[in-house]
Length: 398
Image (tube, rainbow, N blue to C red; front, side, top):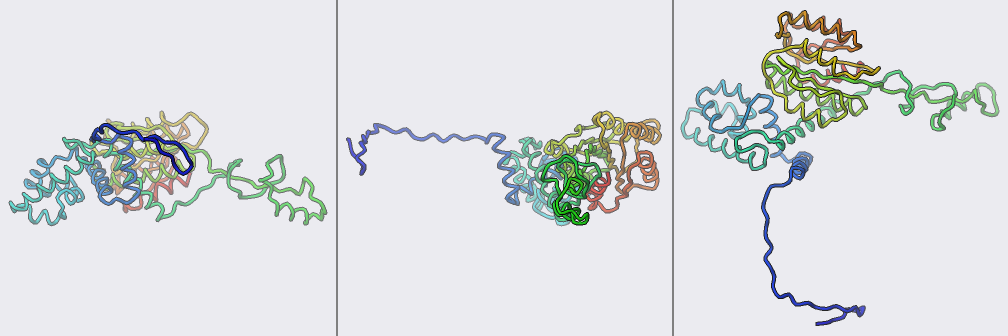
């Protein structure tokens, strides 16, 4: 059949002999799509996904290897207090759907045991369905990504509430902020301070502006800094201490990189567990901070020696921040080895600050020697909520 429209355009109708059914294809999203989905969930305030991210982050901080409902249930029944110390209250609450105190009071009731076992299995299955954990309960890359986003957004909101602060150094900078004024030299027109130039000419009784009257903005920069955050991940840092130290690392990385400086990371215990050379790659630092787990002893001397290797061989400010809650315990003479490493670092132009979380008297004594030799600052932390503020204060002091 042939027909025409209102503009006399000729169309031909074609008969369709048969039509095939549309085949519905099922399968998982590509990893990039899954990451976008998770990011949108966090940015849009999806409570369930944010809670999932917090749950995974808590499991990492507590050193929980995998989400295994049967093992968790057995531990809850066998020794509740020990299990609470192992998993932490958030994990128990989110997987059982009951507060930690309520679980403790009713854990010996058979009907309650059956109910919370069912809840743990269902909640773990939800994590698996979201591709946040595997069938074996191991955290996936998507799970790590989600927990990284939650860590970042929580700390960023915290920093915004507290205020970032500003810092300045005295070196002149072509593109820095306009601060003081200086005499004329060859420069850009935008650097001429018009009002100050006119005032200068009037004071000198000139009817026309001459070269000697021209005043320029003296721009000042923040200076180039490479800073390495050395985080103690020994067993005593497990839980809240480690969670707080991670958030402080996020604060430092975010602010320093925002100001065009570089940040590195050393995760240490009895051995150097992980390193990131000074970089401006914030997401790389965020992922490495997120995945830190606590274990074993402390070797600060080895950490300082590693930091010396990692700093760039450039003329710039080089600063190491040590965050720890204990004395060095690794080595034949750990204190002496630590102070020797500090001296070597200082001779290499590296300053060292120490953030001591609830250190005892002996620990504070050593930390004081470290900062005296390293010409840095010593911070004694009794309130974990102030660690991020302290680490930014140290950064601004450089």
